Image 1 (cartoon, rainbow, N blue to C red):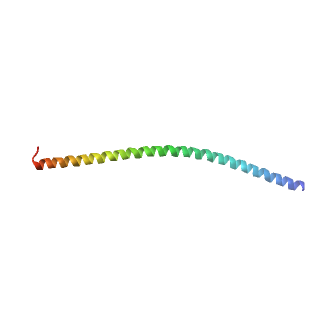
Image 2: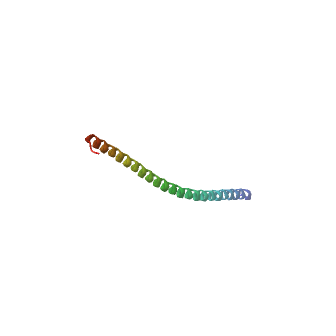
Image 3: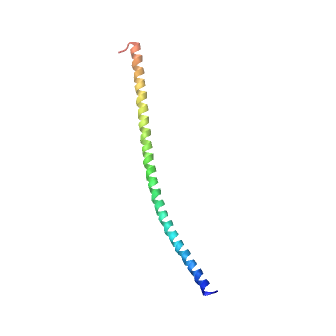
Length: 85
């Protein structure tokens, strides 16, 4: 092999190694960012779950209040029809 061919292959390998090092740094940065995003998503999911539970409790409270109001009106109507005061 000639010296020029060896030098060319060596330079080619150096360029490939540099590109791999750049890619490795990029992948490490992306891995860190993805880890941060996963943590944020978990936090957001837990907050949304808590909010859903609170909304369900509020809806159940309003339904219970509505049923109680209807029953109170019904009992009052019956009492008036029966002549009870």
